[in-house]
Length: 110
Image (cartoon, rainbow, N blue to C red; front, top):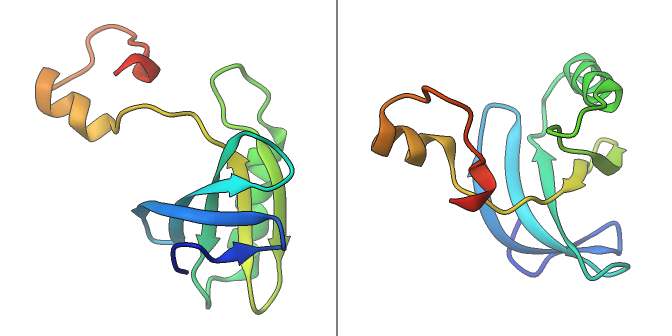
């Protein structure tokens, strides 16, 4: 993945947000909407059973504090989740300041 790359002829990658065991997370621009989105680009070699299990779990979530999946595509060349983007701070940055979360906080205001 690289800055400026367009996925599914619709989502243009802006900047990386993070990396984990299953893939990379990117901030992207949706060409069909003024909103920015978050894209999880899965590493090649991830077992499809893991991908589908995670996707099923995410699609079943219906809560005001959960991220919504907008789009997804799974194939040998490219496996991605497109999710809504909610700007905010990293939890690890908040924990550096407070060392623990004693009460609920609105992470979006940091």
